[in-house]
Image (cartoon, rainbow, N blue to C red):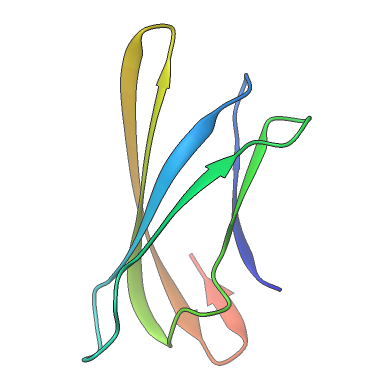
Length: 81
């Protein structure tokens, strides 16, 4: 299984949005994910079609809202950043 991994300094629950930037017919994917005991968040990308994608993470910590965006590419069994 392939993942995008994000390390946090604290426990977190994130809303993740996977948005296709290329291709037709590919749908956005949305999920809620909590960090593990080491504050690592893993977002599965096995069901993402080949092409360019953007991940958007949203979370709250200390009464503040945060947002992170990152583009990535999925290619035949390889993940390129």
